[in-house]
Length: 562
Image (cartoon, rainbow, N blue to C red):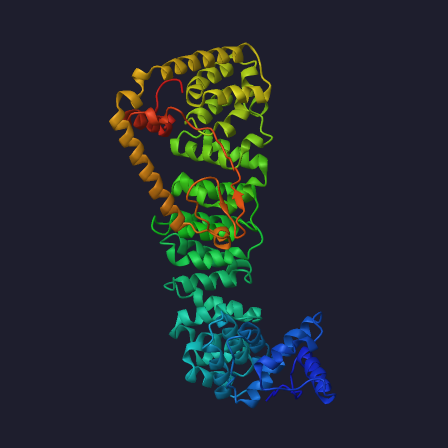
């Protein structure tokens, strides 16, 4: 048995190095082999921190020594770094020569500690089984909850013996789950395991998917083709059981392949409404980091839009950012949605245009689009009266176009935009330094419109403040109560990290407060402004319904010149 101070057969060089070093220090009186976990943690500095191999081996030696003195019953305190010791456990378990009972005691020493060490303990058990076949069989009988890890270790130790003693046909799920955990297993056994599983055509589960994905990277030729086909067949039904194993596998893949793309598309097509949000997030998390191919990402987005809804694309935030890194491809993708016959696609296209601020891109409608598409771009970006700060910078220069149709469409679409945002359009023209006869007409319309509004405001007889005073006051009161409730609710539900770090000061009145020294501290002024629609609130429910229906209309079903 390795006791932390002796050199046993098969002991790794890094542990031999640490043992020799610590024994030397102990002989010189500079170090003490202690049974205290805290002592070892407090004296870690004796190891050169730049020597990582010794740093890891230090705690492995410590664990072996303390376990030897305590018959495996190690006492950890709340202040101890349990994670460091669990990591050391897997380093030493496979060279320890511990008996199954002794191993059980060490395992149980960690079980009561909740420090996210479960996977490290399972790894240590597997390493133990991989080194000591007969002992692992006994360990299964006394700690059956670790059976899967033990079986994985037994496969690594002697696959043929495992196959004879634990026939996979008796429990295919158990076999597949254990095999997925194996490390450094020979290719011939990978092929043998695959042949066993694929022969059972009824074996279709998350365990079967995990097994197929685990083995596919080590298969070649016909076996690999069969494996890919098996995965695709499973995805053609209800894909819910396969979301996690497939996404976990995708996360470690480094490149795009037709098989990967097909797998994701089949997964997307089979999603149900009740699990699609979680599934799409998992897919997004698994692909956006390594998968930057624009064609691949575009195909995935199109599949989501066609199989689910176009709005679901917005949930793929990481993948959208990855596509956005390639500006030209991203713009082409967004434009394909903006020009789409289906209204909901166009809504998403405008949303992407705004969210990713394509007004700042290198896209130039006059150079990059033909006459028809320039007209469509104007109509589509201005149709919903949204976000003039992101829409107008690319559209207003078209007022100088040599194409009469483009100028006419822009002039006609700017009229309702002027009604909604008034002076913002004029300021946008001034900012772009655009001035011609068409801009002059727009100025004229704006001045006439502004004059009419000013005259309307001067007529007290038409103001609800005077004509409907009681109703007006009641509306103001109701509005104030509503906003107070909304602010209180927002404050309760959205406690930010920043607010938790700051002192909360309640102001009774005025523009400041007195500090502990009695000095008045005045409030600073923080301002933010954005253009807001002026006529949205005046629309009747019927007008709102018509406006929304116009936005969502399918151009393929609409007659006439569209």
